[in-house]
Length: 449
Image (tube, rainbow, N blue to C red; front, side):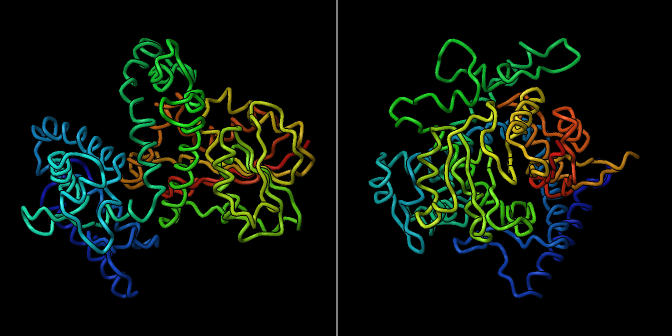
């Protein structure tokens, strides 16, 4: 949007009105149900250009409006506490499964909910009193003690994977964020360049298991958690990644079958999903292109999640192979698919992962890298070319990666440099950052060795 001085209440109201009218006009014209807080609301707006553009403007204007109306004193005092307790209440709702305690299309009283979540009624009332102000659940009438679902809480009730994602975001990785300042102070303060060592990330020095030494995020996943079965963390992470892939798909960002012209490969081609977790991507692709053979590679601890995710009727097409991508690739394939893998590693390790493919590569073998590819936020003349909501998402992606792995998402030039430094025999066929679709970037490579 315009300069900060132009972010006035009057201008913001005009933007909100105009953007809202654009969205609602499209929905009415195409007979599409609009969003609401009712439990049967659609989970997203249509991912068409005119709606996406208006949505970005609306999000930006609403955010600025909230800041102006709240006032800087409130925004930087009470609002800080809201951010802390919003998260803790969501964690409670998730861990005690409040979502299944209220039937979809029905209601439940506080005593009924308390019995199902195994908490005192006083605590249940406290949690719900807070949650309703985030539009998770709603009370049928003031002080009625009877609660129903909203669109937010119903989403959890209908999507069990949402619980895995919430656990991953809050309980599994959330505590790392409290160690970011410590990581900066220890390893980057006073230096010209920030640390790029994984072991010096906030996640590593957090040492949540109290081992007495820094632990990488991946080693943390492999560590057994007290009271949980072996491999619990790795399996949870695999399920969470599968969920977020599906959850973001309606936004037009993550249709894996569009990442490559899979039908252009000869029938019977072998496709290896490097670090493919529980195989959710290969299952989607195989369902559209069953003529190929798919091999999912990941840590041994993920195999149980793979077996649970891949239906028996697809096991002849999709198989699991335990493999560490820091070891030489043993499988010769027609195409290697790396989705959200290299962005988890600094350049040194990312280059090694690519180089470890070389022993298995045959001339003409393809590598498809699905990653976030940063596109410039400005035109080089001081003008933004990406909406603020997109720039904020990019900043969030950077924060998440840097907290866990001491890396930032890569630009087009940085991806090109990484690939060619790994081996000049890698030829980049194409690279697309997809502009405002911040989760969809494709790097296509062919091996010319």
